[in-house]
Amino acid sequence: MKYDGEMLARLVAQAEAQPVGADMLMIRALIEEASELGAGRALERLGLADRGAEDDVRELRELLRAWRDAKKAARGAVVAWVVRVVMALLLLGLAVRLGLLGLVHE
Image (cartoon, one colour):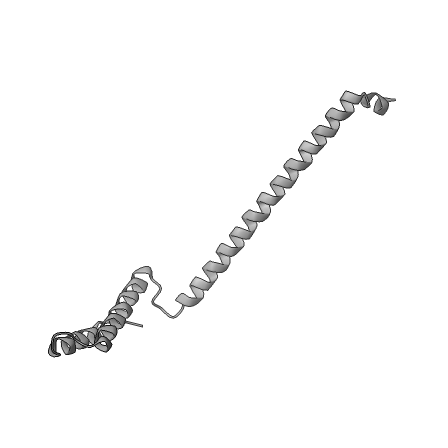
């Protein structure tokens, strides 16, 4: 959707023609039209003004969600392996301290 500002120009001209202290409805219409114009320009600058933009944004969000899930799973796996290694080292240390390694060699 292309925003050219024509409606905003008409609203400004209408507001100028009204007496000082334009009514609230006119002010709201000006703000709404200016907001739409600004949003349209921002979307065009970002390259999101075409019809496929909604699908692109949805796909990017899915990719970002998948990336976050993968990071979380990888972090969990690393923590689990670190805990296993620490536990194995503790058990090995306990076995050495109690002299249980001699039982294994016999």
